[in-house]
Image (cartoon, rainbow, N blue to C red):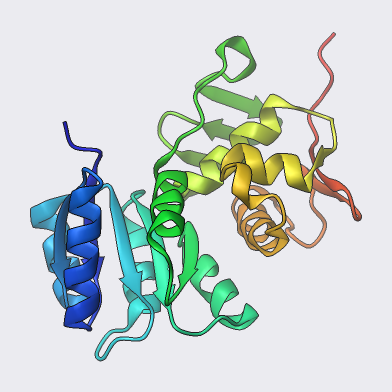
Length: 232
């Protein structure tokens, strides 16, 4: 049984060959493309669960391709790059990627990142209903959308998992490390830049004023809290 379907989009033939061999050996079904434009076309044919997308490609480029994919799909996206800078990482995550991997990378690390990007938090009984209403905010976990008054926004898979975990712990400050390890996995406890980007994007979608958040508030140096009315 397949572990999942992965589309590799990279302009380097050697990278595509290595990826195909590595991922096939790990039980994944694999297809590849050499440009962002070709990758977008293959999405419709191959219907992958995850895309490994190189940032630096001729033509459209990985960041623009990521934004287009994210506008139309909730599949998992991992960006690949040879540059390990804060700017590149934030740009990739801000475009909608679930993760960011720097070349060259070792096989165990890449496979671990793929598993983390594909994992989904299970609904935890009554503590995580399919739909949650807090004042004018409605979170539809099943449909992956949030509505605040008249504005509706789609959530990426990791935004959904992050918001779900916060709402499962209402009015409690959830430490950075706990959030990271719950949503991304045990190896992500120190990746605070991930949280900053995802929290910023979540606030844009659920808050009336993201600069003065009402629902997702910050406890400096500690973590984040989802504020909800206490039940009687």
